[in-house]
Image (cartoon, rainbow, N blue to C red):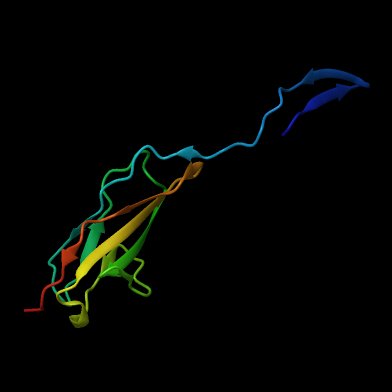
Length: 116
């Protein structure tokens, strides 16, 4: 708790009301991430994070193949590998804004096809 008192010549001139800890605000809503692009091995896809409220200052990404996190796949883009064919690709998007608790939203799964 913080309480401030101004003193001049030994006399209290003004005291502030006592305040407790300041909490983070809650984000109103997370967007619905959508994987966009051709779903085939060796073809780069990306994620559209959707509309968030308020708009995050920063997004972070975590790509998953069949529910397993892909090591170092933390960009807005991902290129599925040949070993990923027939598996479900999802991406977890986290939105963060100063003064707000972060939110996480996950895309719908999309199946990776073979390269032409």
